[in-house]
Figure 1 (cartoon, rainbow, N blue to C red):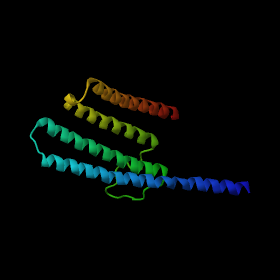
Figure 2 (figure 1 turned 30 degrees about the horizontal axis):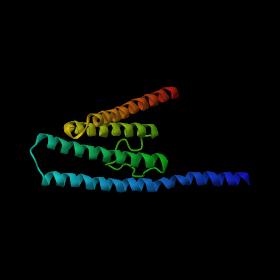
Figure 3 (figure 1 turned 120 degrees about the horizontal axis):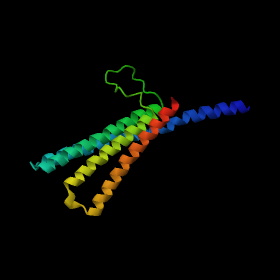
Figure 4 (figure 1 turned 180 degrees about the vertical axis):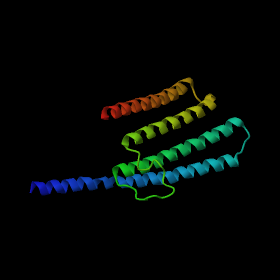
Amino acid sequence: MFKTFEKFMEKFMFASRWLLAPFYFGLILSLFFLLIVFIKEIIHFTMNFTTNETEVILFILTLIDLSFAGNLLIIVIFSGYENFVSKININNHEDKPEWMGTVDFGGLKLKLVSSIVAISGIHLLKIFFGLEKYTQSQVILFIAVHFTFVLSGVLLAYMDSLTAKGKK
């Protein structure tokens, strides 16, 4: 009787991973919203076109920032789904990303943190282009937050390397 209950619980727990699937569907929807913001930025810049170098650079940085966020979403969607829900069966599709199916949870954390650092760096660069809009304490806060992301990424990578050495 206990073994039957134990098997039921194990199957139930294993099946509970599918409760994460709606989260990944929500992330897919957020990718569409990000695309809408990307298109809106292009339309806004086109309608208010300027040859001001700073404005053009800020526009480009905004598009890069949005594309990094989209890349981050794809990595989290694919890797998270494959690591925690189910393998994505696309066999040998010609467009299958090389990293797909090879990013474990540790690799996902590193990719996530490095993307956040890149996005934060772009925001910081945009802030430097418009320093007159911010107080000195706000700029120091932005730098501190970015430095915290960088330090967190370095420490996470170091901890993962220690874990990898420990497994060998």
